[in-house]
Image (cartoon, rainbow, N blue to C red):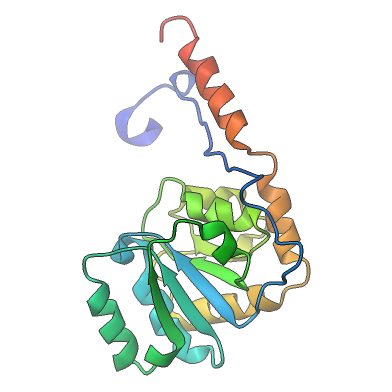
Length: 201
């Protein structure tokens, strides 16, 4: 907003998205499965699903579960078959209770081309699940490790290497939970109210 529209910094406020820390939290009686990664989002092209599929051949033994909807979902199903990973990809459709599914994953991957701040990343982190995304996702500013943040359209090699590291990095899930705990939904609501109550708004 500053660089493209010349808006003075004094007129800008950054209010980060909040996350429901009670609904999205680590499972007590269940450990994440290290050979399952998830993709959560609708609009598969913008969210980078093709990058996930093309990295999967370099992750033997790892399966990908895709939650969300897209008009061209059949295209991605055929792509998975064409590159030889169709038996390791499940398309789940939209989920009404994603928190239960998230806690079962080893990691979540969202190599998005653009996202102001993907709530799904914050929700996964709140569940204690490592998340890999790109620098074009505002949520990545909250990630606990810089190496979890890739450039848009990452190579299959780089994405696969990062997934492998995230699946086996000790304590990474707990650090992800710690990173979002300062950002509950109530904080976002309070900060928004403070801006709305400012004189001249």
